[in-house]
Image (cartoon, rainbow, N blue to C red; front, side, top):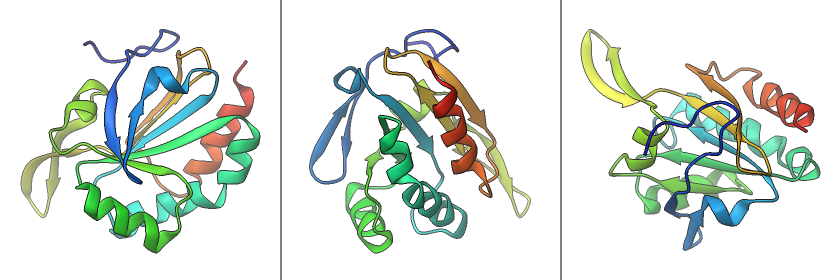
Length: 156
């Protein structure tokens, strides 16, 4: 499956998520979908990003938009993170990096001089017809969720 391209329908995927759900993209048709990829549960930047989406969740819902967070963490880790932060949206567990690779968010990173493959913080906006309408890569957390909300409002 090739990486999603702007203004093209995103290929269907099925993935395990919190609350014993299996998320299937094609079942979300008719709603906008915001998928944000983040490196790790309960780390400062990832917590702040999730909190920002949480705090704007009602406004996203008014725009007929589902929010999904994705990282390589386990479902057990996601459940704790989701509960502790009171996230009203589901988190997808992608331990085999299948979804991360599909969206091309696994890249070489450097931390304290050590190189490793990791998730590059990225967000994708899929419209109600299943088309990729916007993408943000190398996201800076501050103000990002609000920027995504504005893009959702501009869709259609």
